[in-house]
Image (cartoon, rainbow, N blue to C red):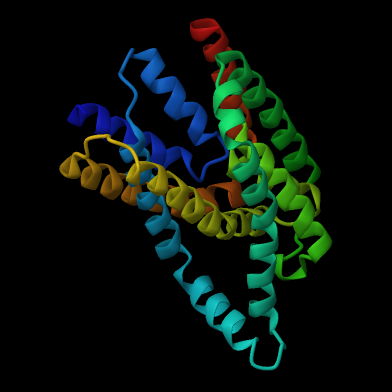
Length: 266
């Protein structure tokens, strides 16, 4: 794989993984726009590992509270607020895990068309804008999240299997619509990303293990490192940005992106 291509795609992955603009759409769009060869499964695994490292480091305080509390809660089957949050993260992951296992091959074969990516980018962008306007005055903390609300957010997350939807975008849309603050929505969306990215990486890693694809370790290390640094920086910036400005700049970007996709690729 060309080093320049690896650098560009790693930066794209790092920027788009946690912003509500769809990493899958960008990773499909960029190579098509420049007529690059497919980056390959090994590179996809590497940049997923990079973004997983980034989110774990960014959320290290929350994870250090949630993980031990969840484990210790098994002693008396009694979980404190942090342990309960761990259960909610697991509950939110179940729908996308099941749908992904059952329909991943079907989605890969039938939902990567440019017009589908353009339509989902536009539709879910407008939906994000609606939820953000509706939730401008929201102040509910994430600790108030119920299991019923979590199931709804988890079901919304399954829509992110369609390229162009954006996992972070659709989960934040659901949380904003349920009355949670922008920062709470962003941070819980990031927490939900930990098991989802880990499971996705394991699935892709298993596919890589049985494939005959040549592994360029230097390129993979570069891609993983760069995507991790960029993703961490984006998360840090994004939380501050949405608290002050909101989601509308991303909504506008998604509308423009859908127009570009139709103009260039459809």
